[in-house]
Length: 110
Image 1 (cartoon, helix red, strand yellow):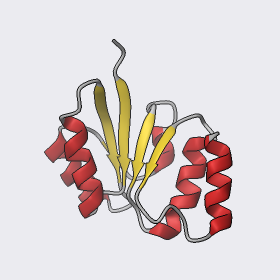
Image 2: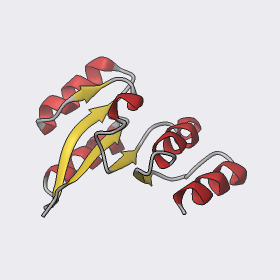
Image 3: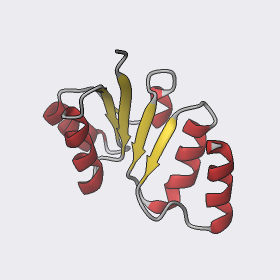
Image 4: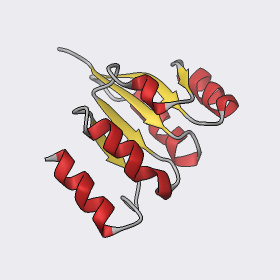
């Protein structure tokens, strides 16, 4: 069975929780965590025995799915980047700042 390659974007409280939980999910491989704060990304990556990234775009082509746990203002552009490449996304709530942004992501996900 092929493992699902996953990553977590954002390594604050919720992102760290996502990363730690992915480690225990059968059928997944946590290929990385990403945060604009390099030290935080490295610390969480070490804790989860994975790789640290500081730019989510470096994960393109490496993941099947991502959890997005960054400040709400960044949900839309990051999710759009992954959805437009066929990557599945789980977005912490609220999904976006506006209904229009949410509608765009829903259309991309379809």
